[in-house]
Length: 251
Picture 1 (cartoon, one colour):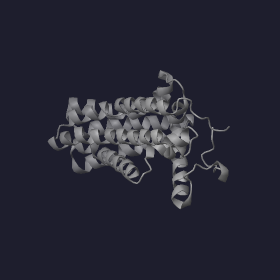
Picture 2 (tube, helix red, strand yellow):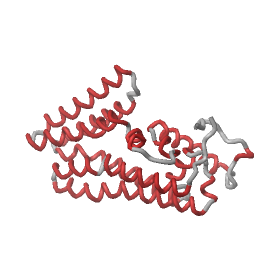
Picture 3 (spheres, one colour):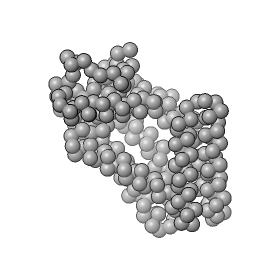
Picture 4 (cartoon, helix red, strand yellow):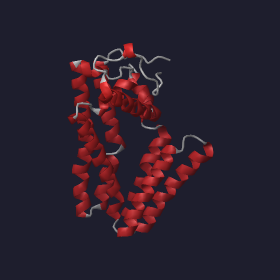
């Protein structure tokens, strides 16, 4: 596996590697790939076959899925049955705290749980401040919008982010930009991911303005991990099509 901080030697640079723009893209691509590697995406990017275990690992494993899904599910269930905001938020935050404490006690990478706790806490604080249950989902709108905009900008400037991530994960760097088929595939995949984030906003925002907390919470769950997993599998299929025998990173 390539060291994400290691730089290519001059004679190992892709043909278009020149100037500060290329250097900046290389460094940014390494950072993105390193983050993806830590999340488990690096493994499936280089796998010739995709198994259920590989996909589960890329989604954070059973514990990661629980941390991503259960706080929101508990909030939705409690609020649906009680119509009380405070108990629903308390149950959601309490579960996120438990996940974080377990991670800290076991010293098993608490970053994901802590990030989830911060997100749950910030959303709960906003909902408590306004007194509106639907505001528990507002920060998610901004997150999805930010991802969509970042991907769109990267596409418009000619450096699609999905290409940068995939290129460094499979050891190809930015060479994909010099091969038309791979460049088009990375542009297409970037559009697909933009579609994912945009679709969440298109579907969920109307429920927010309608004050339909139950529909908003349900679509948030359905368009969260399940839709992410579907797009992830599709991305793997496209990557395998343009990298049928993925180059391996040096050990």
